[in-house]
Length: 356
Image (tube, rainbow, N blue to C red; front, side, top):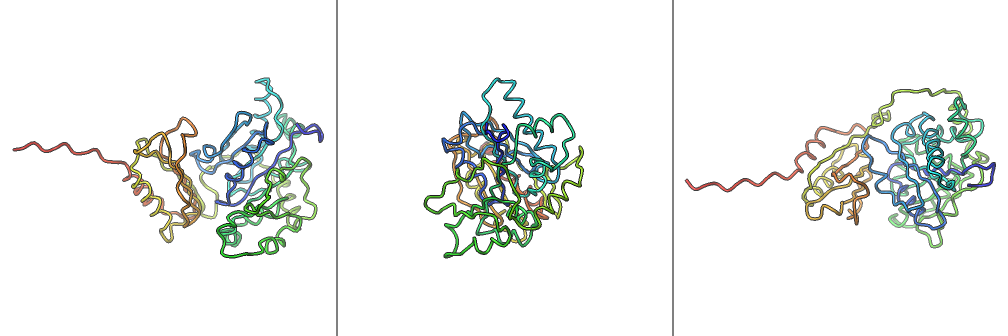
């Protein structure tokens, strides 16, 4: 536990869909200096994929939550932190040293930040008082994909806000960019106070970005205090929220099969979905159980029309051994994609015909 006000520092890890947040989180958790860290992973959609791709050690608590971190409510994040605090008390475990929250790529950071800073979202319950007393926002790290990031900024306000609130911006996929480019100079007007870091540059130390103080909006873009003030004026009570919808035509749907699939069938599905013009795909994550080695799932990642190299994991991350895929996009043609996925199931061989 940190000694500033006796509260646990919370680091918010954000960034648009496909920016590499989970890769950064895994790099953090592999660092021995992160021992005693609790992790909250927010997922968009009703089928959990992200939490299975986070590598957690024996000293790491992993809690996942689906839904309201992606929209404008504060209750979900406060509930998750309260549950972490209570779980530690009930189990008699040593106090956690820090918390890292990985948001969904569609998250608006304003309500999350407002729920963790003094003078932000109103404290209206005993739960809120416990969270305010035991946790504080220490910093915001935003991953920025230099390949697809500019297009995201042009189309989604969330991408702008994720940059504007950041203390540190980590530039990802710079190893895939066409030639040198001064991304820091180009993006600095969006957040004059942010420090920019190339994740592929020699000497990059992600752990050094994890804050221990208290978050401040000083020096950030003029819009930042205004966004927080707007959030403070809006009271978010209990409300029904579809965890697969986000507005602006953006939605998520999931697919699953219980039987192992042929490797070539899974790869064909991924190629078709990611290469089809007009599919509306923004992000795809999946785990596939393949017939040639059912105990080693195939992990698939795609951002828009780019399918990244497929990876065979050493083992399933949890007890769910189904093939499962989550697709996030804008106005996606859901039925054709579902129909395509349905035909992946291998058909039973026909018995040999008896001679007449």
